[in-house]
Length: 78
Image 1 (cartoon, helix red, strand yellow):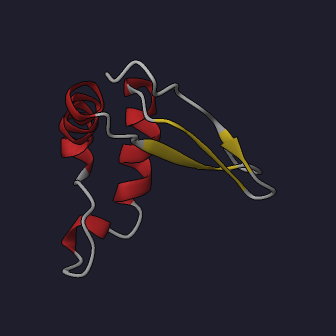
Image 2 (cartoon, rainbow, N blue to C red; image 1 turned 60 degrees about the vertical axis):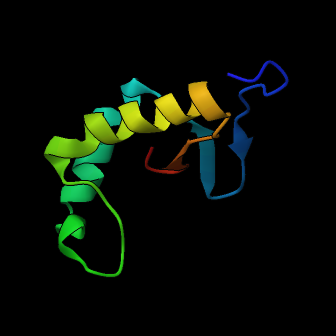
Image 3 (tube, rainbow, N blue to C red; image 1 turned 180 degrees about the vertical axis):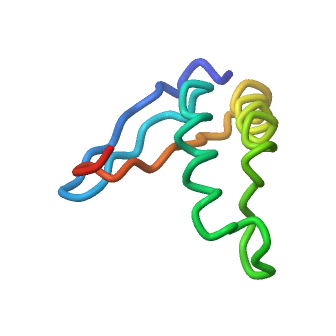
């Protein structure tokens, strides 16, 4: 990872943006299963069984290219 990029958590009134981590896999799988979002042609969402690979790819992009993947968490419900 680029040494000048520091992980940051951004907090607003309704949502929290936090650096994506493998710990987010279960919650993201639950979120993608709601409405079967991966079946929609106009969005890119992994199926629940592909969330771990999606996170791994995002974290590889962070480490190799300085990408900044975030998880968006609803503040009230978590």
